[in-house]
Length: 80
Image 1 (tube, helix red, strand yellow):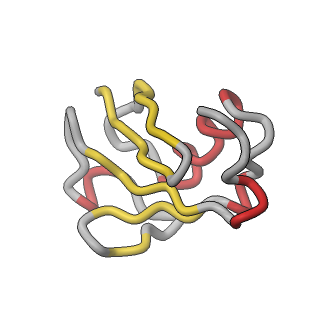
Image 2 (tube, one colour):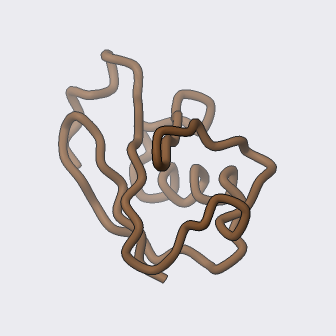
């Protein structure tokens, strides 16, 4: 399913597996954007910070969902 991630410096869409864990999504982001380490990423959906061991089904993330990607200020200089 396609999920859009929105950060201060732009947005991008990734194909995410159904039942993917939050940590797997962070690893997918890191694979595409090497300057965003997994530990520096904070994902927020519908006002809730997502926990690494939970999956997309737990949070109700579906095709077309938009997830906020919070990064430390020092990483927002990199373009998406």
